[in-house]
Length: 242
Image (tube, rainbow, N blue to C red; front, side, top):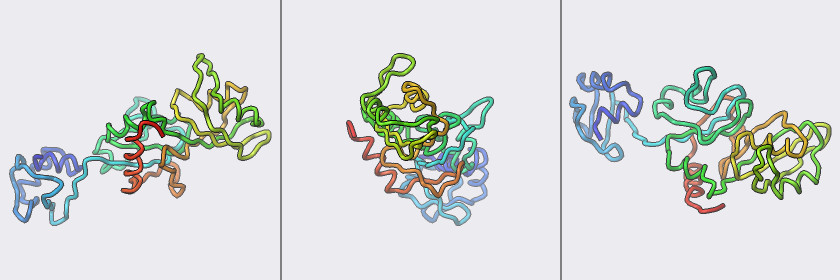
């Protein structure tokens, strides 16, 4: 990889700005000052410093966000703020994107990465990656609803869903529930409850596959995944069915 491309990819400036850094002798590779942006390096093995600070190259970025309501799960939008708009410049420079979507008014766990291969595998219907949601429902949720979800329900467009694992956490005029599904149809959780005559008034995703929402993250906050969390996701993506 060219040294100027590596530094630009890591967010140290545009190609033009990186060229100026090189001209000033601020970049050192394996103890030697490099001024030519065309210099080829191995970003994973060569020692690169900029103004004496080590530059650690990484190809992919993996972020966990506690998505706030009112923000859309997209890379760009002409009208609404997106989850990418929330990112710091040093993270946005990797051109990441959300893995799947959460509705505009839905909160909770959202994986953001630039690893297209992993994202494709996690979203593949063949993988049956489970996603768990906490929701508040505007009516009493019953054992009959649990059985209906276990069998799958028919949505307003005639689609019959795969089975869902519905758990009642608190029942009453407003019911707290937890629902695990393996699909990601448009507004699926809301439409599943509409199919049994009920309405979702609050929705939050708490897990995706092995990844659990870090409850220490405030709405709109995010962090990089740990190496262990990344490995867990990679292992899940390799399975035919989980």
